[in-house]
Structures are given as C-alpha cells and as structure tokens.
Length: 416
Image (cartoon, rainbow, N blue to C red; front, side, top):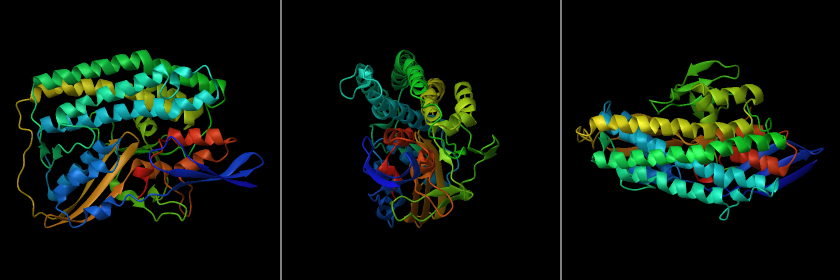
C-alpha cells in the first residue's frame, strides 16, 4: 500500500489530493481544502442590504450567481413575492451569461490542457500560446459585456435589489446584447462544437469514456425558470421534485475545511450533467446511456449546455424588448423587517443555496451552500464525497486529476 499527496494545479485557490494506492489502483481518495471563506461571519449584525455588495465577492468567477441567490433569499425573508417582469428577465439574462463564460473558460483553461500530456499535436490548446486557448479567453471577455450592459459592471455586480433591479436601459442596450449572443452562437458553432467532437474522440482513443463514475444521483435546485425545473434524479431514472428543506450540511471532516452536503441523507451530483439529464438533452442522454455518469459525459454535458443557454439568452432578450417601459423595481421600505428566507439558483457548477435570518433589518444568521460542496465536499460517516467516489478505482495520478477537474475545482467556493 502507498499513500501519496498531490498539490493540485489549475484550481481557484489551494487544494490537495491524498491518494491511497494498492496494486496500482486507487483504493481511497481525500480532497483537502485549506482556506476559510468566513463570509457568513462577516455578514452577521449588518443591515441585510450589505449582503448585496459583500456576497458577489465570495467568488471571482461565479459572483453573479451569489448576487442572485442573495437577493432571492432577502426577498423571500421580507415577503417580496413579485417583481417586475422586466427585472425578472434581466436577472435571468445576466445569470445565464455568467454561466456561459464560465463553461467556456473551464473547458479550454482547465480540461483541454490535460490532453497535451497524451498528444503533443494538440498545441492549439496550449495555455497562453495555443490559438484555441486564446480564442476562448477572448470570447469569455466579450460575452460578459452583456452583464455590464444591464448590471453596470462585471465581476461583482450589485444591481439586483429586493423588488427588482437598479438599472434602467433602452432598446439600444438590448440590441447590443443580442449581437453579443449572435457572436456567441458563432463561436459555439466554429469552436466549441468541433472541440466537443474532438474531446470525445480523444476520450475514446485513450480509454477515458467510462472512467470517473460517482453515485449516479443528480440534483438541480432550479432557479432558471425558462430552462430547468427544480428536480432530483435517482439512480434508476426516477425524477422527483427538489425541496430545499431536505438539504443537510454536515460537519467538516478532519482533513478539509469544506462541509459535506447531503439531500435526504444521500450524496448527489449537481451541475450541468444533472441539468442536462433532467431536461433530457438528446446528446447527453445518448452518452449517459452508453457511459453513465463518467468523466467524458460530465464534460460533454457542460459543453452541450452552452448551446442551450445561448438559445435561451436570445429568447429572453427578445422578450425583454416587450417590457422596456415597465419599472425596474417595486421597492417599499422594509428596512426593519424580520424573517427567514432561501435563495436557490443554478450557478455554472450547480445548485447554489443562500439562507438568511433577518431580525429588525439586521442579519442574524447567514448560510451559503455552494455547488462545490455538493461535488467536492468530503466524506461523511456513511459516504465518500461525490468526487472522491469518482476517483476510487482509477489507475493513474493524471486520470485522478482529470476527473477532479471535470467537477471544476474551486477551493474559494468549497470552504466554509
């Protein structure tokens, strides 16, 4: 038996992978995160509106999802049930835009560079030098201009407020956004679509199609009303309605600062694969039927989702044209309100949950459960973490790291 510790690269923050080997096969795996987020402590005793500025800074790449989860939690707590359709659509537009840029960056910056170790001829994906790599970075910097058009800036926008949004825009901004979506669809057709096919061919060539399977259970909290329903999928295909009250955050294991999360006591995978299976994407269903919840299918699902999201973005922006004359926000002074609220959204990596307790306008308690806790969190007394389960049984360090990256490593989002 051999025990090995790997310091992980291409990760947002710091993390390590501890492997136990037996006869050339990984028998156990532990993912360790060392930093502490501490945002929940920072928020206590502050006016609840402060959370709209602080929470988008939880993460540099999915901060907008944290903003939307925050404002939904506050609205739920203080009793705001309706917001203008203009604000509702605009929030979805900016939320989906962040997901698109996140997917593209992840695939080209985190996933494809691993294949350079298999095949030197893939120099187009070499970091900082490869043409495909550079195109992806350029695209990611362009598409987020949609968020800036409606939210004032990206990252760390704070334009969503209880009752709606702070921005007021014209047909001109919507047309600019539509043009950016058109460019995004062209980028998908000329780059992502081809590279998805290449990725699957490489997985077949190097026997990677079936590696990295986890529990075959999937969860999506919803939050994209025009796209995905809140559901969870049991291993044999049964889809049930998601209920946030069944989510349990457990105590962290002794080897990680991250807390494991369970749904009805069981580990579930969240993210694009969960969403695409629940929404019955034909390509993903076909791959899943052949290879299960594997590394290759997990990556392919996230790429396939880019096309779906761009189509939805275009529809939403065209619909937004019909609501330009509406007010952006229906605000009433509720600064002394009390209550408990949940905000559940779909971030790029999966289901994100914010819970807030407000007493007379001040935050008494705040809890954040991130997608990375679902997928990358540690074991509990009964079960390994989802990613840990997917690594057990592999026969190389490289494959272990590739499977980990298929879940999109982020220590900033994973820690408590």
